[in-house]
Image (cartoon, rainbow, N blue to C red; front, side, top):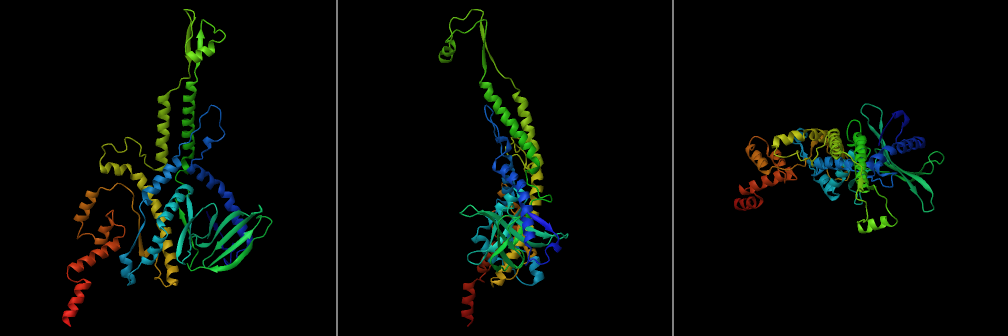
Length: 454
């Protein structure tokens, strides 16, 4: 979670008062109820499944996970790409080499971290990423649970980061419970231990450690301006849909348990067992009759209400119902684009907010690597963060468009439009090298020319 604190409360971030840390953990524990509710809905542990028994049937249709996973797969199904900005290179007068950072990304499979960040953004409304030194002293990233991580920012309009706290309530083998806190500032890392927040003091454990990131190594990602989850506003609709489906199945079950009523006769002793066993009863009067009493319900009306709830859920979450038979049909490509318009707008807002955090990650990694002598410091503005929307590709149309735009658009931009190219900058370098070799300017040809000149 993100907490805004007046800077006067922490005049020195390297000497934070224990009262401030206890207050932060208390505020985080109070906010855990909302986070836990959202996590329960995502995992399918809905309130409609609790506290019912007997003949009632309780089900939960997990639209929360459908909305989050569909949205995350839409813009993070393909890994994020990082391309040096050529305009920035011209201004700086030097070429940006991202290979050290990208090597760190590849070694830890950073796309998995991005997927978890996207899932937590869609579920909780915000999430935090921790940058730390791995076992090989190279920077790595981990997604922090917002229920036990706090990023403290100042109360100014810029909300500058002050420090971060990662806390957890642990238990020793003797059953004693205690709080474990780790505080990250722009230069140091400190570990604290304490018992009850009200009575037991917090004391530092171990020595203060230094890190090389140059700023607080915790990055905040916000899902939207309200910091709400993707399905948070449709929780009442999900509860109503689950109740409707549960009652529908309960009625179906009770429909089978119909009552058999006899008119104009009475059963003799043993007739009930014989009727249940043989499905036949002899000796009934001629004017007697038997009928089943069944509960009647309007199945068509129930289905209309269920469809209306589904439509409202997709409308409020700005997602597309892929199971709708009318979604595709014989619609043209342009018509499908209009149907995906709302989802595209929502995803683009997510990408803009996530891009800010990814640029901050690049800056932190490059600072660490520059201290270790691996590269120069890279400003996030010097790199283009490219998201690939995960949609079916009309390969023929893309190839035709790229072919027609040759000579009008630069080659790296054209290569980035091809779905099978992961690194446009590397692909462009390969193309230029092959052209040079074909033109007789390759390394082997150059060496032979030099020998002949001698």
